[in-house]
Image (tube, rainbow, N blue to C red; front, side):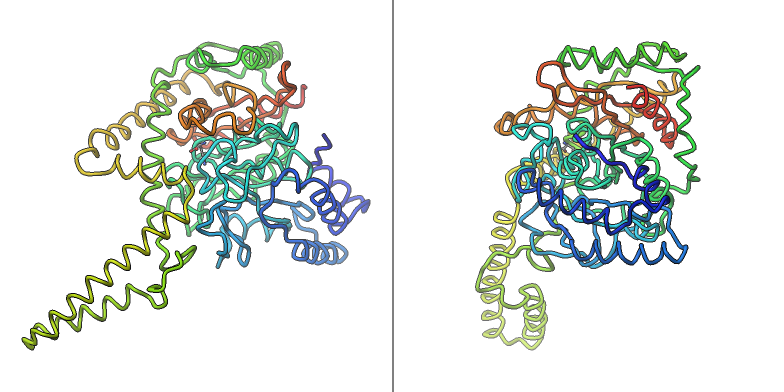
Length: 515
Ligand code: GLN
């Protein structure tokens, strides 16, 4: 597959062999040619992208190039770009447009990036196959009978099919790394707090992070240089200095201490995937790395812990979609005016009637209020029943259950405790090793429809990725070739200590350069 990189485009621009406009046009042509089948984009902004490209070209002619001039970027449809739709793959937000730019978008725009469109994803980023999107599934460009992974499947497919240089995804439990592995591209989940979440539609706020996806480690590093760093609009963004990530790409692995966690190479792991990862580790060893086995004993609780905490946070975050302020609203006559406001007015009138002792008026208002309450409840219920898809509803129910009185201690609080244990496992591991190597996923991509009837099967696909989100550490997936049986991409995951993205990129670059 022809996989363009920004680094190549940048060189061609510097040598005046191409222009930003030409780059955008050629991606638009490829989108026309391929995206009917792939369904990677929910919106393509032809005019906006071309106009911005022309503007950047005029700036270049005046001797004002920007660091990312000519970088053509696709953005997952749960990240806000002002004036663009931000559907989150849901009917609930189908006709909603962003009112502001996410902080990462502001930074990228200032640096000269061109946004070519928004990419399809699992509904509210919940899924591992991109089959839960209201806009239909995305297909894997390597074989369209197969899923591209999820939830950032549109971003991964667009990068792999050469429909853009790079893309942004979001990763709550693996949604950048798993689709990157399935589509044969590079994807980084930064440390929690490394990249601002301002303008990322919330799924599970203590786990969510925006991450770059591209056809080379170098491009991912270039993007991280721009999007990393503290942001006053996100109180969880960390005041930690941002190094130059491209400087880290030295190709060096001499003396590097690599840990292979036993728990990531057990039952359920495809034999060929295991072998492919092992082979890469052997190459690193030949080049001077020191490899040792280690244990992360609480790994087995990762999936259960993740699916309790992520659903609990989602049930709370998604409460805002009630048909009142924005998004989809069920078509009920009673919704003509704001029901909530009307009720407030009636309540104050009722209070006055009570003070005055006007019993008839009190009875009348009470009856009206009851009716209004029923109408409001019907509006919420119908809006949410019609606006959310099955997977989102399943998660809201699971999360509400885990948070409800009587179950909170048993499930939610316990899961928080296990989360701490998982984090301690990693802290301990990084006392002995610099980086961990694991497969990104237990199997190569599966076929469309293969796991849709069995949510647990689907959740198990995240077994190697959710732990990094629970611990808040960074994870990078790099492509390591194709599976011998079906010829589909396989990814290797590198996990590092908090804020050690530079090391992951260094090792990821060494691995991909040697292939
Ligand atoms: N596949 C996982 C889930 O369904 C992860 C999703 C994500 O990272 N957004 O929750």
